[in-house]
Length: 182
Image 1 (tube, rainbow, N blue to C red):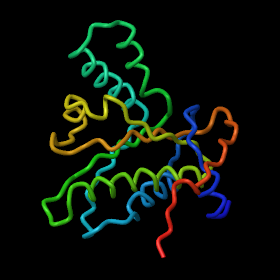
Image 2 (image 1 turned 90 degrees about the vertical axis):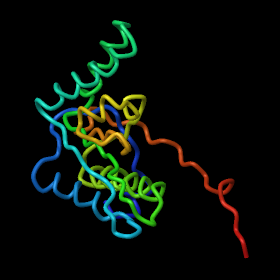
Image 3 (image 1 turned 90 degrees about the horizontal axis):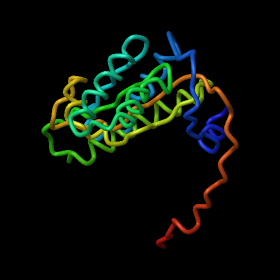
């Protein structure tokens, strides 16, 4: 797959199973996350790789966080299953730096790292989906993952082997989203 095919055909796939990337593949994915635009070279992000028994631990953290706000058994059960949608999750969080580069730009750089890792996973033949949701903004989850309260979870990048191939999404035309200034 060349870069043109990658950039024009990549799409998220939430139907993931073993195997997850290991060795050089995981190295390439994490390295891609480090090569993103980064104003001031601050590297204002952190990656937490979760797999194996760590998925059980993350499930318990999710359940504990949800139980603070609800006793709805169905929601708790659904939440407990979330980490098992893929054999690997890379949690990307910010590590904001006190700097002239605004936090918003640091957040965008961290978001770029998620995107780059998803693109690399896809280029290596893995499926991936970038998820957020209410647990991304939950201070209990951040605490459990050793993420400072003032930092943000940018996303949970679920990675694995595609269980099924999805139909190709239609191309979104760009014309109505572009203005040319001459």
